[in-house]
Amino acid sequence: MLRTRFFVASSIMLTIGAALIFLLVKSDHSTAYPFMPEQAIPQGEAIWEIDNSPAKALELNTFRISLRDLAGEPITDASLRMQLDMIGMVCGDYSFALTESSPGVYEGEGMPLMAGRWKADLTIAHPAFETIELSNAFKAVYD
Ligand SMILES: [Cu+2]
Image (cartoon, rainbow, N blue to C red; front, side, top):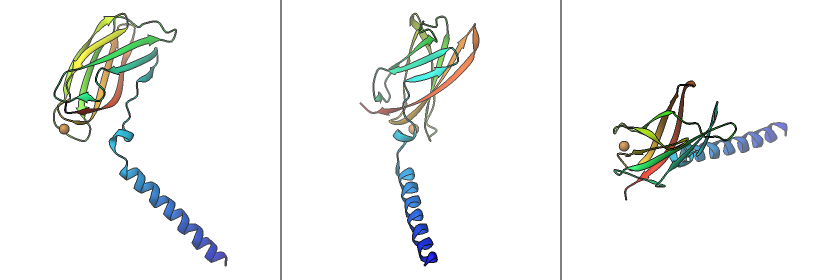
C-alpha cells in the first residue's frame, strides 16, 4: 500500500518534471533573453531605449542610453561604446560609439546584420568611476 502510494507520488513528480523540462526547452529566445530597459549600476541606473522595436535588420537603429545617478541627476561626460552580437550565431558583430546628445543621454546607431535575437554589450567609461559593462538583448526583423 505504502509502495503503491510512493509509486503514484513519484509518477506525478516525474510527469511534472518532464512537463517543466519540455516548457523550458520549448521556450524561445524571446523569453530566455528579455530586453531589460532599466539596469542598475553602482552609481545609479542606465535606461535603454531602441527607437525601433523590434529593431530593423540591415538598417541603422538608434540606441539611446540615459545614465542617472542615485539622486536622479544625469551622469554626464561618460564615454559609451556598444557592440551588437547575434545570439547563438557567428554572423558578424557591429560596434559603435554613443555620443552625448543631451546631459546624461547618449545616442548611437547600430545595425543588426540579420533578423533574429541579438545581444548588445555596452561599455561605460568615465573618469570618475571604474568602467561598467552591461548587456541587453533585443529582437531584429526585416522591414
Ligand atoms: Cu546571424
